[in-house]
Image (cartoon, rainbow, N blue to C red; front, side):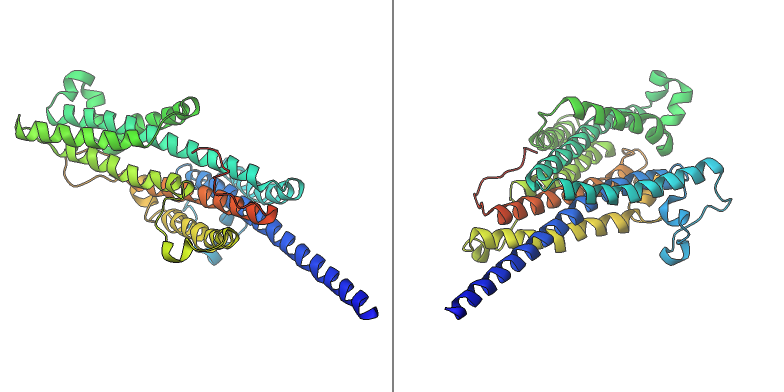
Length: 353
């Protein structure tokens, strides 16, 4: 009798200890995932402020320059920029505090997963409109320049700006990029299928122009490559949401749903999210980094009369890494919610991307 009572008490303690440990783990993973997504957004904003506006950034503001190997402006920082640096630091701390507060007050990981889905979808949608509008506009400008018509159409002053990569980037590409983000707020019906259709149409026009009219220019191939690269990198997050990426199905398909959720969570937290951060950090850490360097210098191809969009293609990696990071975090939250609630349906719980 006594042994049975002791046994029941030990089982109860073990149950509550296990359940409490599991709950704390879910809370911690929720905090890490949400904090990572918010810090990634802040990292992109700070990258613009540091390398375009000349702000000191968090590391230089708190005096950790030598430890992280960052660069300080040769002439120092003006008072307004120092204030911006303190704002950057405050925002960094605020993001961490907000993530902790949100997780402590709201444990609904499915709601956060849906919010991340929508954020990723908006970011990719804006990128789609950007490459569509900028691609067409730059192709037209390149055609006018190749045929010597840009002076007649725009005048000598604007024609001189069009001939320079930095001028075309600052006065044509960037305003169109801002326009794309506004269009993405209003239009939520766009599909990446249209980007695939545009690639086919552009390639078809090249064939017609080359073999029927004997006309071929470098910018025509540049436009196809521009849209083709965007198609593959932008569609990665949507493919992840639809569970369309390649798996070792021989092993995965036969597993229980709970085991699948555990594997999905493990893969997202230890492989997917760190990979996205690696792309962002390696590409955007310094002025001469793999992504920052071509963007800041408005890098173009050596063809001369091609499109001035090579630097813009480097930014595709930002779209890929950030949208995938949001989607991996959503994937993590959805899988953990299923484990926590014990619901293992096959349907996707998140909103449409």
